[in-house]
Length: 158
Image (cartoon, rainbow, N blue to C red; front, side, top):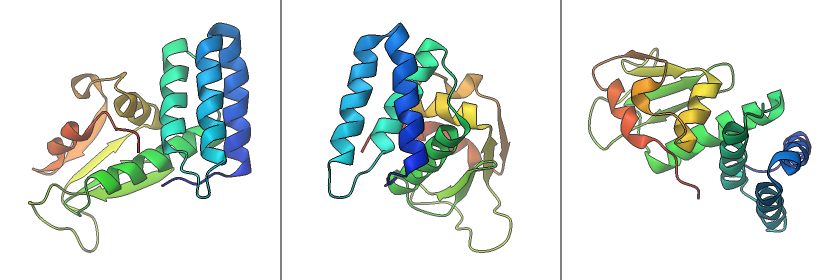
């Protein structure tokens, strides 16, 4: 679950304004999903961030630093929720890292994990939204189990 903070909300609203110039329908949908989450007792912006990243990618809009960091943290947290475990570490420097598992394989407890997947934030956004496939993604992989991470993309909204 990714909770709301003022900077992230401000950048989401800025993105909505940029989207309004190129795709008013998508801007309205983003605004409605953001407002809907913010009206909940415990808002979870993960789905809103997935929509924002997908819309920005589709229309060639850049995400601000705060929004990019929020997306990376939220998407890594979602990976951890969907695939709990500690056999593979997914790293998205400088903002996020998460350990995921598939029910089998080695379990990492301390030090450098034996299975690591590292990628740029823009790569994570592309994979998470389905705008980039694993075969085209530039990722650094180490370990015999690391390639299994390909199966967890794209990420589903909560």
